[in-house]
Length: 132
Image (cartoon, rainbow, N blue to C red; front, side, top):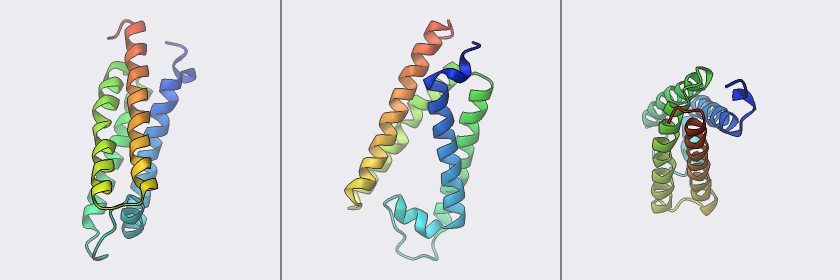
């Protein structure tokens, strides 16, 4: 338990939570640019409300992940990371079907891989700590 802040799984969760919060700020400040960077550019820049909906959800996910991390809810973080893996997989499929650049699609796929590895590490950690 005292090794919480030295574990790779802790830092992967912290990174992913912070990444979601950075995306919140980016989507809020520049929704048109953020949509393009995500691989789904807006056809009409005036229709940016959906990107702001994304920002609200990203903030929720980021703060939940970081809150669970601070309170050392390892089993809950395992489930969170495992379920969250579906989002970048869906993002990769959506951006590929929208003919996004391969690097953008690959970034979404890489995010899914990082989440899957994080979930695996968290599961093993919960099992070893008797919380599985």
